[in-house]
Image (cartoon, rainbow, N blue to C red; front, top):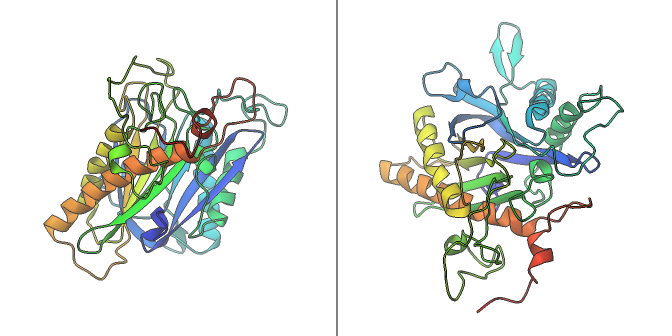
Length: 339
């Protein structure tokens, strides 16, 4: 296992970014349409085609899921993904036409120092920048992909450090694979106070985000910090399993995975957040999941998401702009573990 969401059979991930824009897109492409649902716990989400993911809605399966920077402008990225899927003959048939399904969520990265006036006109110029990034990300989908300052996490930040794209995976006792993919653009912090220790430290595996564990002496979280009271944030994520689930069970998986945000970020689910998790089941495993298995899959999804959030910050590199937030590696010397 590569400790990536692509350890879950039946999916691939692609990234694309524009360095001058300081933003990007990440796409999960499913090998075959996957059961999917969503849980939105933040107060300021930016979504496209999210309502169809609720149990009871007609469409049950999706061809792709999309995470994008750019706030409302990033919603164009899903159109680029749909264009590539259509060209490949994907989608459910409606008469003689096939209709691909690629819901998505966006995060706010409009104030990170990048040139948001590309093309010389206001509001991102005349060209469909995010449409192109969505198309490029979908075209790049593979089993291996970059973390940190990449894809939808390219322009992401936290209150005190550069945010980014993270992923993690694990297997349940019965052998079902579970993975998480997240773009961390949090209103708060992924670390404890002003120090290097990640809130998600108890869930870390094999030193995947530095191996520092908890502080030797824990004196509390320190001063409460948030970026802003404006809706300039959002942590958006996808969790996936190779188990076979119903749409209602996928909804429960998305709900359970939100516990991972609470373990790895402070605060989460605030009014100025758009914290959103998609959950997908590829059905690639030949095993039949019991109720116990499904509960464990949900618990593992929360653990994976917590780890992926810390990895996103740990792997990120600072943006090359004046006043840009430092990366974790810049601020805290790698290789020198605190006692």
